[in-house]
Length: 462
Image (cartoon, rainbow, N blue to C red; front, side):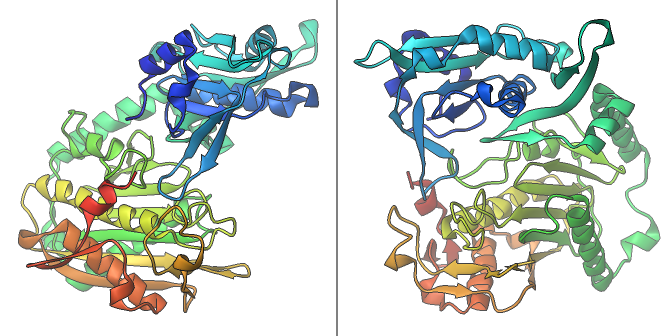
């Protein structure tokens, strides 16, 4: 069970750092093996300020210095496997405080920077930077740099960052400009209220839209997928794994523009997964209202659109930080990550179905792979379950993708929707396309209703 922020603070106060062994980096803590190398110049100072601001702009967190982590094959994120104390002479709290004063505006309140002796050598210990939950009225915390001296000095803002899952999300210059132009609260609240008002005032759909053919709906889905990828600037030139579903006739969701705790909007912001440290739909983002027709959440590894008519699109990166977990070439699909993402996608759509005003008769599911022959590496898919030794002989054969792009679609009656069965159909087609036999597909289970993805087996992996 991951630690809460309060529990992490208790570990720091008690100096019982061994309790953290086995914990995985996430939304609330980041681990460093060695102190920031401030003597090397501004890059380290900027990195430290960025890490603190990322936690301050979200829910708070802890930076732990003097621990070793390892990348395991069974979960996402770095896992603490050993406490490796650092010399106290290499960690000067006053220096850290001074850098924050120079590089952040405004200053986060209540930040505690400590060095605590740990282990048999009294000269060595663990450095901790604790960032408590901040008042929303003080946000955003911005990274800045002062150039010049005295009256001629000029402040130059560098950026805005947020902690997202186990990483830091850096806002681009264009995003900062847009947010400052509109106002952070204005963008989230006022536009959201306008979109919600529009959804209540408008008729469900025009007569022309209600008679749109299935072929037209398919074309609409293709355009929406293309637009999502095009607007995800950091993703469109990388390997993309896209899952999508669209109702075969027009429908409308009830709570997509609602801030109620049980709304589909809120559930998209905090989607449930099979495992606490598994691969899922979480981005750590707040849903943004776009053009009055959809909401979007995005992170550094995935971007998700949910339309008011029930169209649902997930685009995830096939890289070492996500669907090609721990593969240095960013090209080997991780079977467990793949299976978990697909079943979490299918299970989330069960919630979407429950939110329709009037449920559609059928759903069209679609899977797309793009740019999977990238550079000199073709994307590969092993035919085996993942274990601690999966990178050895058991991971073979690793068959290569036969083309640079691929898509597959099929219809499902909504009245008999079984997410675990739909998940297996998607995974089945992918493995067959890569050239694997049906028998080699991992994480599957035979039932009276047919073959399904074995969610219980995945949920029990530790």
